Length: 120
Image (cartoon, rainbow, N blue to C red; front, side, top):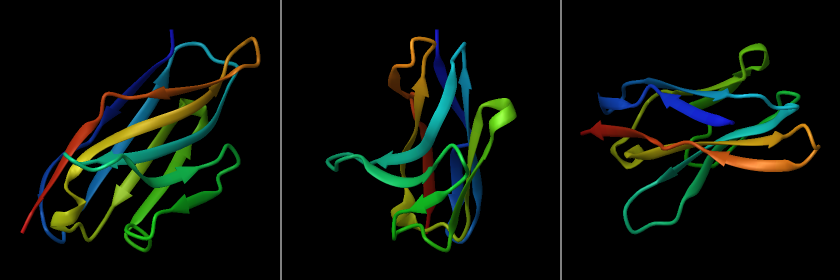
């Protein structure tokens, strides 16, 4: 059974850095794109960054120049390095993985989320 395991959230002061990790466990044919979203109360979930299976990264404007997404395909893991954090980056960060199973079906999996809090 495929699961998403996130780690790395926490409390940091404005201007600080955090690195989030997202590991895909379980048996899959392949992992396609991986992405980080964030959500705050009363707001819809928003894409933060996405990385394709061949390493092409895309970012929301809010994180461009401050955030960097990467992946270690050998370990089925993606990372989100967040620098120069701002109080408005405070949110629950959720990892999403687009997986192809052994029947060649594309399935989206979500993690439980990890809290990031940035104090001013």
